[in-house]
Length: 288
Figure 1 (tube, rainbow, N blue to C red):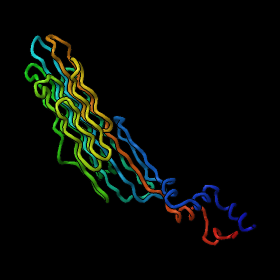
Figure 2 (figure 1 turned 60 degrees about the vertical axis):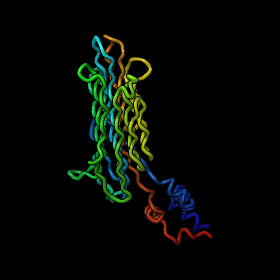
Figure 3 (figure 1 turned 90 degrees about the vertical axis):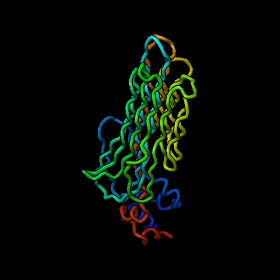
Figure 4 (figure 1 turned 180 degrees about the vertical axis):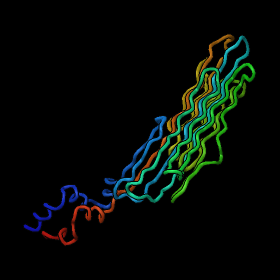
């Protein structure tokens, strides 16, 4: 009884629960995940104590859909924005190290202008860049010179990734407006995921989400004149605007979605946790 009382005195109640916990529940209890979203500024991540590897997942921002500019004649539509790229990998780290995180913004849809380009998501330390997930280009405006805007064309090279279990996929293309003479705005491209690239938009329909965390592209305007629809989070492209009324209003394309960076790390081992609590194998067995 004295040995058991001594054990309680040197080990926290939570440590005892962890020691008796099945291995799979132990891992679930200790694993951590942190998501960074776009703030317009550089953010930072400091490696926690006891952590020796981290996994990075990053999505670039989606491109904004093209707007429409009115005049006295001709229908017009904006092209859809392209979807953002995806990268991942697991890298070794040292507790206390600080990394910089830049999360790509979604390209805005502007009235009577091209859609803005999506920003790239970046994970780096000092001058060493570990991960870059490229953003998607914006769609083209529909105006007098070019009534039917082209869709943004997603990159198919240029991502940066490293480490173990790496992956790199690219977003889908935005669609050109007026597909099959429908007068609709073009759909936005889907963002990429861990297992596949984002789908290309088809006509007014947004591209499919990439398998493993991608999002569907925004739909081009089709039900009457108006702005395009925004892309899904994270990183999908926005849909293009539509105008058929002579002398009608200018309209904006849909916004591309912001990107995202997720940092995750495994649970500490039972051995390290026991050491941190000054628990020896002999004391755990005491009291039996």
